[in-house]
Structures are given as structure tokens and as C-alpha cells.
Image 1 (cartoon, rainbow, N blue to C red):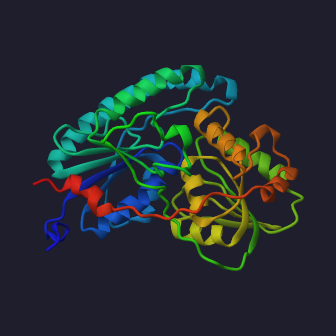
Image 2: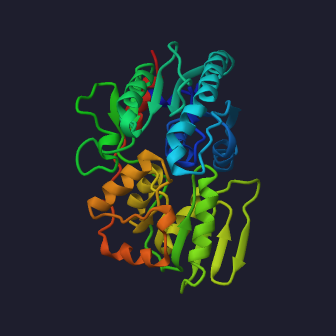
Length: 358
């Protein structure tokens, strides 16, 4: 009999960071795998990330973590200064996380923890996993410092799971690959909640917005203005998670405030091409669905800028800066080859053995 068929389900805390929706959405296949292998996932987050996962898994237990209260600057040049300003609130939230986790281990008899980029969600008492595609955290001329801080954080966890291929080709480049690695770093292959389907295209263009304010709103305003004369049907997902899904049709536009994974998968499959941020989770979804896109990195976010430049250099996907977007930029999409196809071979049973104990 498989050790995973034990009638007493193991409780595993899954805690994604609420910074954009990417951390939450890439945890969806992990949560589903836990359910499939008879674990009991308990979800902890805050804000829109928590709300999104509640809509995906309404039958599960949800807990609220303190917000990191990360504020984005209006100007790209102020990014690093704003991140320094955010540091005290992040540190305060991490301390609060540690206290809550200690209590929850007892209250909910936790057998393991999976933290997607939440620095204080770990314990020395039970196996703890950190999920990140950034073993190297880029920050311009302070990359050496942010890299050391990330290494220190990772050392608190039993294992680090990197959602990318270990060898080449890969999607994260130097973000997810160190010169020297350790046995505690496990490469999962890219993680996506999506499934590719061959269907007739209903939309010429899909706009898929995400990420923190105020840059999400700035890009929405730019795209609505610049695409007003676009010849073709556009589906426009604003990336604002609310209580109910709202749909509005205006001329050739169909607006959604947000979509569940199932709806989003359907609409991306039905779209010829996309405009989206160059967040890592979005890139994994594009690779899984084999869709071409124009990338627009969040201004000042070094990780997104690096990924966009890298993919353009490798002739996979083009990018344009937010402030430079014009409708003519869409002509570049067909000049690029697209992303390598993802063939997932994740051995969840082997990974989850960490939470089985004796």
C-alpha cells in the first residue's frame, strides 16, 4: 500500500506572497497535486492573492497573513528608494508571520510548509519549503547584496523548489541558476495551471494585466488609449480580483475585471496573440500554451526587465517599455519564434515525501 493512501491526511500550509497574482497562481498546481495525493492543503495569504485562491478552492481552509504593504513608485527612477522605504513594513510582517506560523503548527497540526516567497513562513519543527525562481535577486548595482539576503533567507528552509528546468533551454536564466548549487535546491520544471487546447481563435488580441499599483492602472490607461483604433476583437483582463466577475462589452472590446484559471485558460487558447507583463508566472503560462506575446515589463522591476530583454535577445518574444508602447509594436510579435514548449514531468509524490515524516 502506498504511504500516501494513509487515511489520516497530512496538513500542509501553502503560503504565497501577495505581490501581483503570479505567486498565488503558480501555487494552484501545487495545491491540486497535494489534494490528488491525499494531503490536506491549508492556504494562507492576504489581499487579492488570498481572494483568488478562495475562488479556486472554495472548499479548503483559509488563513490570513499580514500584508507586506509593498508600495510601488509612480516613477521608475524611484523604484530602489521605494523598496528601501518598504523594508520596515516587510520586516514587521515577517516577524508577525513567524508568530502566526508557530501558533498554527499547534492549532492545525501542520506536517509541512510550502512558502512561495514569504520570508517568515517556516519552522524548524516541521519540514519547510521555499519556492522561488530567483536564486539571484537582481537590483542593479546592489545585486550582490540582495543575492546574499536571498541566500540567507533560503538557508532557513529545508528545501528550495525552483519552477524551471535545471539545464538548457530554461526560462529564468541567471535568476534561477547559480554557478554552484546544493542538494537542497530542487528544480521542478516550469509550473503552469494551464492546458493547451487547439481551438478556433475568437479574439485577435488578448490584454492580460497584472501586478501592483499604480503601474497596473498606468498600463491599463495607456493600452486603452493606444488600442482604440485596433482592427479586431480584443479581450481585456484588467487583473483586479473582486467579489464577482464583471464583464463589459464596448465596441470591439470585451472587458473582464478578473478570470478564474479555467476561464483564463479558455480565453488565452481562443486568442491569437497577447499583450502582458513579463512576470515569470505569465511567461510559464505562455510557454505551456505556446502563445506568442508582446511583453511590457513593470517599470523599475529588475526581474521583469531582465526576463523581457533575455527573451527578446533569444528571439523568443519581443518587448517594449511601458512609456514607449504604440499600436505598431504589435507588428513585432510575428517576427519572433515563441517560447520552448513545456513538458511537465514533476514527480510530486517524491517531492511530498518530505512532509510524510516517520
